[in-house]
Image 1 (cartoon, one colour):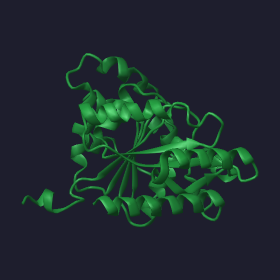
Image 2 (image 1 turned 180 degrees about the vertical axis):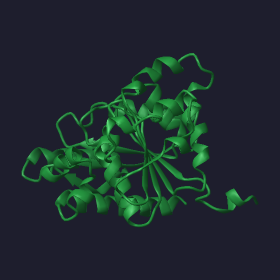
Image 3 (image 1 turned 30 degrees about the horizontal axis):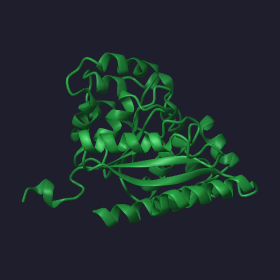
Image 4 (image 1 turned 90 degrees about the vertical axis):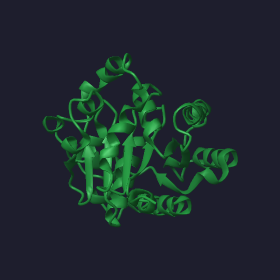
Length: 267
């Protein structure tokens, strides 16, 4: 048996945080879950694969600190190691992105095995971290496809609103197609309900519907609507650093515990 086969963490566990719908708390979930994992001594790298660069902003990177980044990785101008930046969170690094990443979809179209570029480049992270979290853009294009092909699992943030389940069937079909065509190991790590408002009966109805439809795939933890979660990115901090005692921080710590329990179950 090779050393890599003997060690389940010789290569990091890669989780894509994905939902083609915008405004569901995807980036917030990616950076705060990563922070919670780092807080319990897991080495984590966030790959900011969204041209908006919100994960980079939320982890304290100014626009002038983002090159080289994810764009240079995807077009082969730089390797991942050269693009990793330390963040304000000990044990948490980020591969940043900016508006130049928006052009990657067009530039990669003609490349051979274009859907597998990210998977190949992430091999260089072997031995340097336990988890890689990929913050996907709000679309099911080539960038998200690269994330799904590279990932072991998908974590889906789902907002507690009337149209929450709309689009989920499309995402699930996409995951199944990726599994069949490119990545048979891909699984759904879980679905996390976000922006839950306990004062709003609609949130309870949506949560019940989602749990009835997806069963145990839905985490017990729900992420509440919380002003401190909304404020934190403007300060370049995950909410767990900005205000560790708030309801949003406690929820993300609980979510990290659930994620780790599920990870241990498949290890």
